[in-house]
Amino acid sequence: MENSTPSFISPQISSEDLKLETPLKLGVLASGSGTNFEAIAKAIHQEKLNATIPLVIYNNPQAKVKEKAAAFKIESKLLNHRQFKRREDLDQAIVDLFKSYQVDWVIMAGWMRIVTPILLEAFPNHVINIHPSLLPSFKGIKAIEQALEAGVKITGCTVHLASLEVDSGPILLQAAVPILANDTLETLHARIQIQEHKIFPLAIALAAKLYP
Ligand code: GAR
Image 1 (cartoon, rainbow, N blue to C red):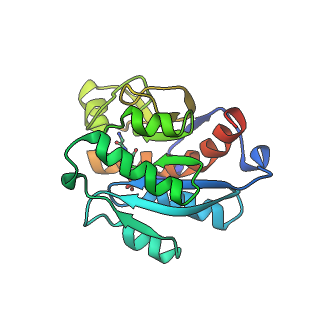
Image 2 (image 1 turned 90 degrees about the horizontal axis):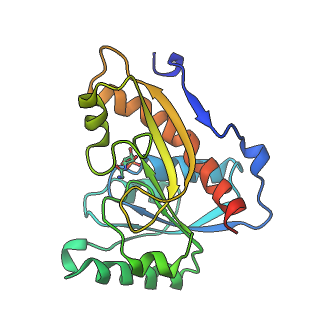
């Protein structure tokens, strides 16, 4: 069922169109299960995305992304946001770590923290976010619940450059996902994630072309 549901990605580009001469150095930020991190790491492994991931930073001690990073032999570090007084202090610690690993792109792969100018100014136009809705609809938390409650018939996911306003900033790639009559939060989230995993690696390569 999942894969037979029609979906639509725009712009319609492929990894073949987006070959990068110089490998990108991606610093990944993740808060949860890390399936988007995994999709990016797989795209790198399959040579669909010319990049390396020197470091994954996660903020929840239980985040599954830790084990997923280990499976790819990628280093990960915990920066527990509860141990920082201000959002800016957490972002400064992130910037310091990523800079020490010579990261040039910051990838928010399910990063559930609000970013501050500290992070955005350290990596101008090089911070990328994914959100489970067709932005500018349903910003903020519980985007999938918001779409179900609104009764829309099509939702999806968006990869965009991060900006100070939450879930805003130039859109790179979107995928549309139909909402089916019997969808629950879980079934819809699962179908959105299938699309997220397709568009995230493509959007990173597209960003590198558009914002070198
Ligand atoms: C993804 O669905 C992503 O769109 C969402 O968190 C999930 C993380 O999944 N991000 C946001 O809601 C950000 N506002 P993952 O940990 O399996 O990659």
